[in-house]
Length: 368
Image: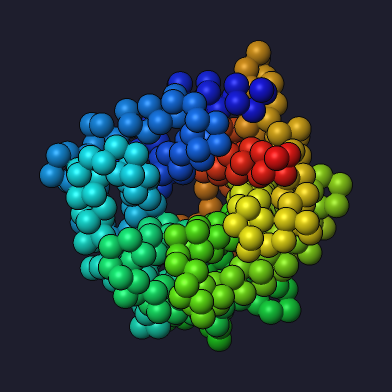
């Protein structure tokens, strides 16, 4: 009950993260969706409906969508529209899906074919972006476009493995500059210098969500995404803290002073593992316990009472790379450890809710 009390209070007091259509609110909406599916409690559906009511018009226009920015982050919040259309049958949600897809079709790309991260980050692939766009893109293709662009989606993951994955470490770097011009990018590889936990969390969640939205009958492409997921899952588990079962902000540098066990990325890993077990992507017998113990450790170690109120602690507030007017964002270990650590940020609470929803679903299955 401790966790559900925290989530209920958090949603009751929640204020939109930004004035425009944003990925942080998207994480909270998807967390509420997971909790609704796991518990059947109508308060979670009501939260989603009330959030969307002033923003999605009858003709499907999303009134606060930043139509001039071409930021891949904008796509994440639109994932909830599929759920709302299924639940209500209201055509405005179907139209809003098309509204979003129109922007994704026109989103600029790198020469290799991947979506750029944002207009202010040209030629750049960030792991974050795979989560923001690909599950939406895959669900659209599966439902409405006869799976015509499956190859495009899979190719974008192949490019991540080709350009950003480090086989020796078993991890992906935070980002890749195709032009190899950014001050943070290696001049030979184009990669940023370190492995940031939340970026790997985004990547793992993107893979499992893409598989969830994908037709398994398209076996070769489904199997390719599954193989990538298993590879990066195996890679990150090498760095799990043995005592707490959580993961460090800079994944492979647990030896560095001031490195810390970070909440948002650990929640994302928990979500990905537990959901993959429920889907049969990973063996329940082998891996369910490891996913569930991450979730249980988060509840025990990161959900803390302060001043008579529960808070989700240990969340990296933000981290990125560049642009030029932010030279401190250089991808160094020191940089990732310099960013503020906060409580109750949506980038942590959203994935925590998603992971807990999956935890409840898997627990029911195992107890049945």
